[in-house]
Image 1 (spheres, one colour):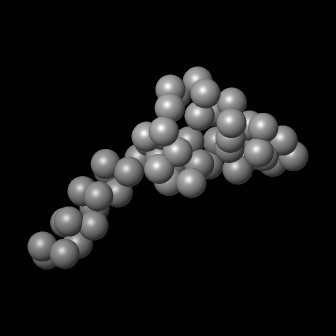
Image 2 (cartoon, one colour):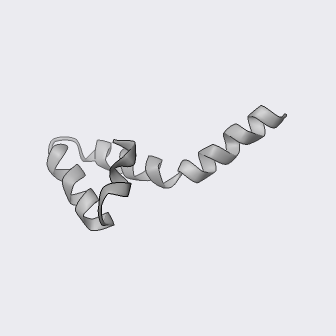
Image 3 (cartoon, rainbow, N blue to C red):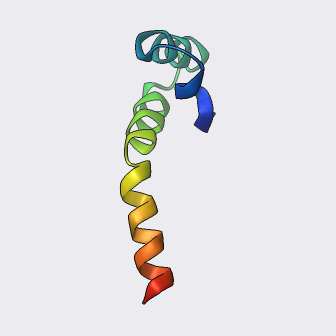
Length: 51
């Protein structure tokens, strides 16, 4: 699921997520926000490793 954003346009990916999770829109928003925060999560992991 993580690489979904690399496979197409943003709109198509979100539509696909919504279709697959019709009963759980909280999951859709969770996936979207989690994917958007990847860069920040990577920075945090690097800081933890370095310190």
